[in-house]
Amino acid sequence: MKLRIEKVIFGGDGLAKDEGQVVFVPFTLENEIVSAEITSRHKKFSRAHVVEVLEPSPERRPPPCPYFGRCGGCQLQHMSYKEQLRVKETQLKELFPVVLPIVEAPKTLYYRKKISLHHQEGLLGFRGIDNHTFVAVDRCLLFSDKLLKEIPHFKDEGPFLIDNLSIEVSSKAFCQNFPEQSLNLYHYIKSLVEKENPRIITDLYCGVGITSLLSAPLAEKVFGIELSSEAVRLAKLNAQKNGIKNVFFKVQKAENAAIYGDLVLINPPRTGADNAVLQNILRSKTKTIIYTSCNPSTLQRDIKRLEGFTLDSCKPFDMFPQTSHVEVVTVLRR
Ligand SMILES: C[S@@+](CC[C@H](N)C(=O)[O-])C[C@H]1O[C@@H](n2cnc3c(N)ncnc32)[C@H](O)[C@@H]1O
Image (tube, rainbow, N blue to C red; front, side, top):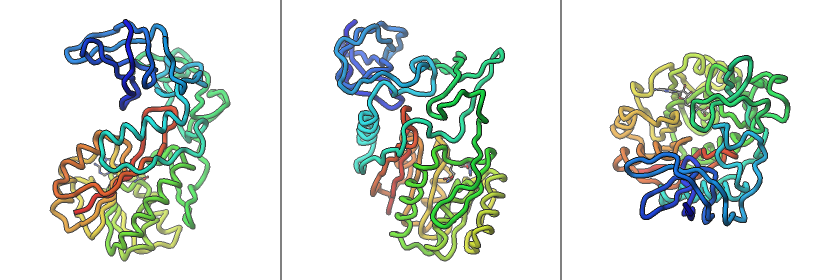
């Protein structure tokens, strides 16, 4: 069948319509005409794969990685980097009314600090695009130009340096996977905190304490809450090493945390914040929330649940070039 791709949706698939029925077609670009074959039919949509690109977009390019299309790691390598940024920004504009320009990545390959490989019959690889078949690979261009078997999978490059802080990280605690771009992200969060001029800050899901410690000179006290005891051990060590005394870290589920102060920083995992966390924020005296998220759909759900707060701004950062993922920093006020 012949399809025209209307747009590229979250997750990276192209969306087309066939006699009114939605068809998802991976590895396509907006406005392309493709010949496609249905691979599965569902009640409300079908899936198809491209047989031939009949009218390619000018933004189509040969993917740099030979495994692209089979390996499940990347979804956007077939489009120019400029188009990847436009697609991510456009998708966010459909969800949120105020989207600031996306911050492009300082590099688009070899940016990841760590990767999780799968092993099968002595081979290294990743999950395929179907999310379960094993695809053997000898290198991953998001990570390095070297062969995977020649490099350690976690390049522990010592402390992460930001402003005048030296932050210890570990493979056992969360840290952003793209150090250069995370500098831009953290500087932006710090600039937002500075504008708020807060007295007390609660930093939920604080990891090894980066945003808490960056905010420390801007507030009287900062309370960092984190579930992982290893992350909190490092956060406390980071406070001590950097001579910061007004930040207090606690191993606790964010769901059970008391919310102090006038500003809440929140940065949950992809699943978003538990409703109990949002209800606690609603019951607190907090006027402003700076919510950082790597998943726009759970972010949108959580913003809806934060009744009485309105979205003031939404700033995307491309932390994951070549993939359909995007990181966003939002400011919410009541
Ligand atoms: C996306 S990371 C953010 C870390 C930190 N804000 C940073 O920028 O490095 C999410 C963090 O939430 C922690 N976490 C997951 N579930 C949690 C929960 N229920 N309560 C508190 N922390 C949790 C994880 O251990 C992880 O460190």
